[in-house]
Image (tube, rainbow, N blue to C red; front, side, top):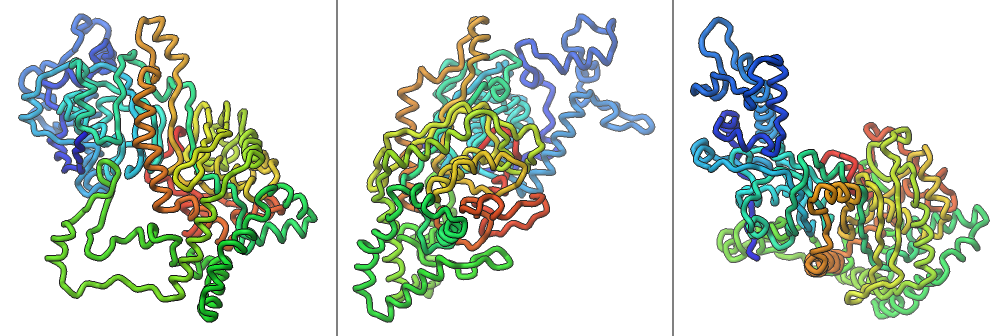
Length: 631
């Protein structure tokens, strides 16, 4: 399917966003929802114009669309506007202020049309509907639409407008269509099935095809179903299923020479629990010794003695580094584990900078390579040549990564992971698994129905992958990714399962969030609402009719992106390498010293978090407000 990128467009001026009167039928629900009219009736009394459903102000029918009283001492525009127009006028002014400020005059949430274009458009009724969608989140700043960032809803909103499902008069503000999402997903997170509820113009039989024709291949509308006027997909959703995919090597213990590995061993010996710790490691207790013997030593033996000594020193320093006062590594590890990851944040010489395109792949933001060659001076900076020591370090690190990818999990190891996941079942206080929530906040209590790891791993290229599926009523920001990280850290570090129950207590600890590329919203569940729909003779919200298409979409657009991104960027390796090798007490709760050995978080609005740990801890909300339904 051809993709059509929709960059932010300049939003209209404050005057342009005020809706003309001939679009009124598109502003109120056409299925009996006349809350604006009822509000005006109450203000006029019981006996005044009871038979007039619209209760229109005569001034509006006489060429005064803004209901402005002209002339007169002290006259003020807002004093003579209807309540509804005042709200729209205020909303337009606030929207304009946000667009001019944070969005630099451009917005993904506001698609402007001229007054003539709006006036010429045919007025068509809107209907409350549920839009069933799926998407691969790669290259998007989550689902929730905002002015500045490229989001899934931003592309969907633009497609609705292009397909005629949202009128030009309502294209400047998604609130006019009552847009609500069932579950919000974070940056880079995928969804095989999600639901939006809003008011759309759905008279055309081929409206779904029209909308899909304006979407990239990685976003798909499965279907559109009529719902009742009061339906909210967020409120009506009974529960949600998520899947998390990760390489099985995530269950390998930290390397003994890493900071965290040393802390675990030292604490186990100090507490007299070293034998218990080794027993919990089970089949992987000698993994790194065997890798050093069979994979690393042969490489080191072939090196010049001076180079070998320097490589060993660099590897030791990298694994035993401190954080500076600014939270940065005191000895940053500039050597990457493979050529695929090398300098991935900066474009190679002779190319232009890149940004996610509409289909999530890289798209150039400037001229092409050929054009750049013509416009750039010939004395461009040449690609840096690596020294023999740097090349040797890269070779050793690549060997470590290759050894991790060859790891194949055992049933015993999977049983331990399942035991850790079982600790989440039931209703608990998950304040440590999200942001900006205290132990006393009632909304931190969430109910987990099931959390299962598939006992049969799947193999993609050289890497073995595990599938974890969790079913819960609702989830807070980062909750699932932090739950996965806690369970995995317990298994890989040989920690007691009781740590999960301790994390529900009042002490505030730091739990990292696992990489977002492995998370996917499997499907939302609407059992209660579907029973009501059945009684009303309406079609239930059920993704079952698209099972074949959804599975194909998952294979081609979601799973494929997960596997390719991990192969290219080694996201899970880098994540656990970061956790293992930064000298900080934030994660020492996983050692035999327990929670008391770790840093206790203070008020999150006041505490300075080390910059190098902010991404892992997830204290930044990825630019979106927390609404209690995302990960």
